[in-house]
Image 1 (spheres, rainbow over the protein chains, first blue to last red):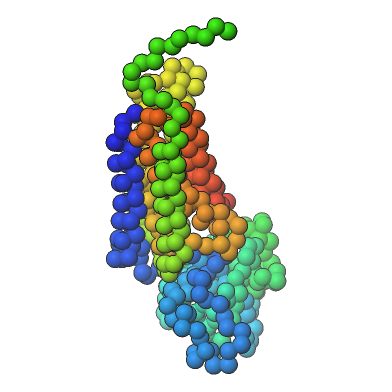
Image 2 (cartoon, rainbow over the protein chains, first blue to last red):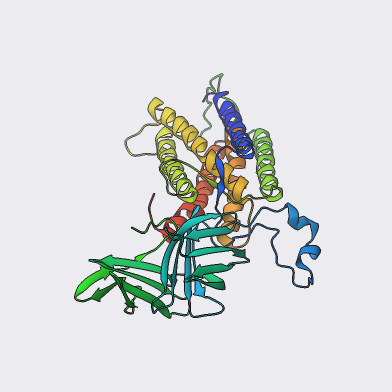
Length: 227
Length: 192
């Protein structure tokens, strides 16, 4: 066996690892516009919510200011209800993109698209009629949605499958469903100008039948685009 | 049995010197510890790894790591062939040793951006068993790899050392792949 080859390999490997880390530090391989972390830990090690602080800003231990900004998991869906009304809200985040659906199950609905970075999301509909902006608060997403001229503040939690956001379209009908963590659903089926409450969706079957036509319900992820 | 006098060829070393192995293990341990210390002290940034053709950083890493794992299997097979343990091989062949060396080099080089991202953006984590095992194995893997490289430069190490270290390298990498790529494909489906 060669007596020098392996040593060269070892040196190249270690130099390579150090090199990649240096490149990262200089902003090479990693991009600053996206957030990625393992789904079960959205925070880095310093982010423990203080349990006894009265003035959150003042009593944060100095170590907190040096930890990294909060980051979304690589792919996650938050779902829940607004604090002040019957509006259901679902926000899907994937990589640096976000998609959201607002729905009251009767006649208010909006599909929004936007971005997710450093623990914050910003979304709006194509014509700007509805907006949503929120930030990570621990494991939850907290913010405000504006639709139909009203503001809806919310704090919603992670929706583990089968809860989440679903969308299906067939013929001229588009249906949106928000399946909440407690199993209840809020959705609207829109055909042309008319909106009716969506038929109940079995997330396992992932499809419904409307007027004899089968419509598949697709899970909506953060990078979805709405025709 | 009558004792047989063996003619010992001049170039054959005494295979009983374990000290070089101890030194190799020590150097490897330093590497492992250094990686662990960096992973723990460095503030994880949570930033994304961007590689063209993949839908996200985690997808890129999961696939790159799978390439490394596939090459590691080539490593095991070629090692068997080098030692004549593979049916149809006699051992000492040139093809198997060239294949072994270069598949190994390629594997470890492809693993570097994955490891660098893991260390830089995620750091040493222990919030659940899978992540803790992955963090520990990540440190272990590069240490035992460097150890193997050093042992390879010596001809007087006991004969069992290289297969054991090689096996440890492969086992470490397998554990790393199971706690990352396999978990990822399980959770999020196999996709690019």
